Image (cartoon, rainbow, N blue to C red; front, side, top):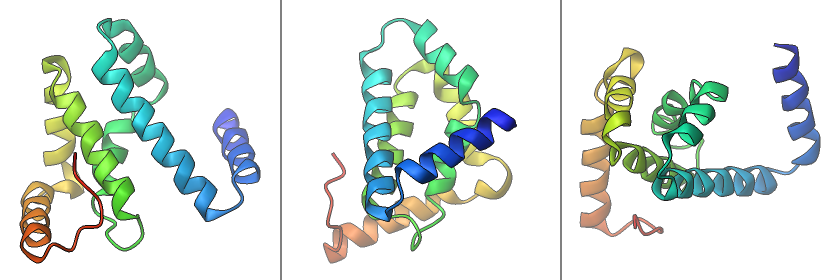
Length: 128
């Protein structure tokens, strides 16, 4: 707990502006997608999830905060989940995170938003 608090304080001091925090989040999500797609060795992913056990749940929960989280970050979190699902060993953990607890209905909600976005052409970001 103490280490977590010190880490949060360091990040708060290093990224004092909202734009810097959002850029850091985007870079981290891009790096995660690259790690998952480029990593043939599962040991790297296992060590990542040992240090970040709630990462998948956090990716899923980002989808619930429409107004608070920028669209680009939500799309990158979806791309991270998709990258994990492409590896069969991580599919069960992603599905469990999507269907458990307060996340029920998130898939149908995301599908509806994607359809609405395509119909109205309102999305500013490419999904791919």
